[in-house]
Image 1 (cartoon, rainbow, N blue to C red):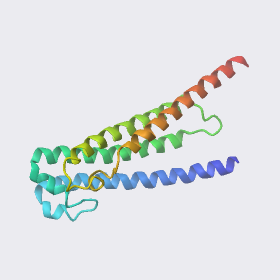
Image 2 (image 1 turned 180 degrees about the horizontal axis):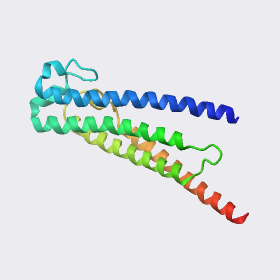
Image 3 (image 1 turned 135 degrees about the vertical axis):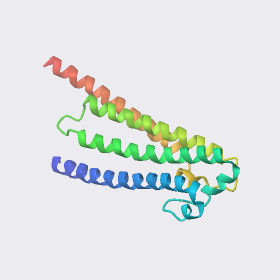
Image 4 (image 1 turned 90 degrees about the horizontal axis):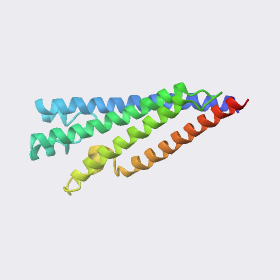
Length: 176
């Protein structure tokens, strides 16, 4: 059983690194496209992870473009950070005694980051709901931000279960 669990955790660590690197590349390309969009919008439209609709926002005003693009880039950065926090969690997880305050705090931090992604996604999506000609998923990669709220709640509950497990573990150590 232990060999299977440790093997699964090793595979999960590798997969989290792959997802983290992919999301980091996506975020970096969005930042570069945002900057190049000021210099040469025609060239920026052909970059990786850039949709031509991004530059239609620019027609509404430069400040609208800056605010919306900053929110989209922030969402990508928060997603990458969540996976980085998960890498840290998997690296610190000790199978001999999984209930530790470090793991509980990391889970709680991930829940808060998911809450921030939900909030940012909701703000951007509510902005785009006013415009029928824009596809929300094209811009944020979030069809509905409510999934992030749900996952944040689940992770927060798990972190509280870990905290209760720590309390019970400490009580058992004191009674022995």
